[in-house]
Length: 474
Image 1 (cartoon, rainbow, N blue to C red):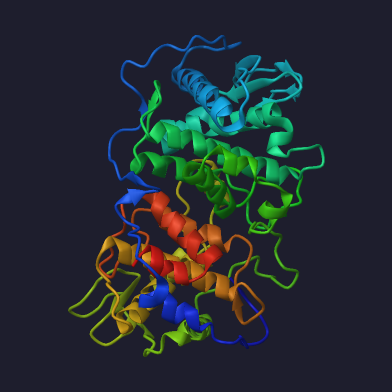
Image 2 (cartoon, rainbow, N blue to C red; image 1 turned 180 degrees about the vertical axis):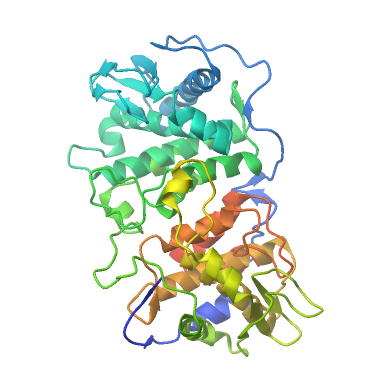
């Protein structure tokens, strides 16, 4: 987040406190936990099915190792999906891609119609010769080893999404003047629609659980995000993690027609990707200090003031409650309506992401300042929910809380003393995807099983407002 020159001077958004925290007039409650976009939450090993058929595909330069097997099966599977989806959803026959290429970016110098693969750590669709290519030397093994086999399938499903754009033509609304980021968002969405088909058990090659399996995919989408500060007008822009997971989830939830309807107008209206503000000298990193914690408290008080309940007090301490919940580095203590925080642990969490460590497959010790602020905000939101009589200790409480954090983030996304900076929402998503993250935890620190649900709840609060938090996660 960044600090501005003046305190927030904004009207209180009453609905943020009232409707978000159990307003009975919000309409019928639709439980949010226990299903993933209407599918049951499942737990099993995701990847190639035992006894999956051998794909009848020719891959130039393939060596037949594990990553070539995963990639080739992914192409065969995605083609099977689109062989059903194109006639059903768009009234046209499907044509497989013309050629496939496997290469090792360490050594190969293969020339394609889109250029050389020398040192190219990538996977890509080339419309000039209607081909899909992948780097089996660096990219695919790195993804598989770090995130699991479904991350390999994710990358190939995205690239095949570009082949679908080429086949749909005007039905996908893609022209030479379409911004790159719109094409990429649409391809992410097409990948999401394919994975819904897999999750429904229709694939001959792959199986994916809606808990750990989709978590692999969401983690891979996070990893291949654009770096904070990238402009959406950049020729290579794909989107932030927030943007990319939004597009993927849209396809998973609503199908390929939703994806084909993505265009420059509706994509750019909800993109969070932007360069750093000229006055943001810290490049989005505000230090955890008495001053910034005070600004955080004022921001939360303003955002949730409409609830009409006593706001929690944020107090430095051990990050745990005496005789109560212990979810360090921040805990909501119902007995005295306080948020107890461990400043030193929050400071460590707020350190900027180490992009070099991340790229090399290591864990960054810090997630960024907004991850720390969002954890405190989530415990503060617990206090507001307790004040209006909402549940604090079930899966829906965790999803409702992350939804409220998203609504609060949107509230701060305007000029003020503490406001969102480029990349902040991705820091919150990083917290949602890690095992010990607090943003989607209930008062005792228990999180919903599905990372897909956790990310969706934050996104819905941010984009749709606080009223959806009680309606969807009552």
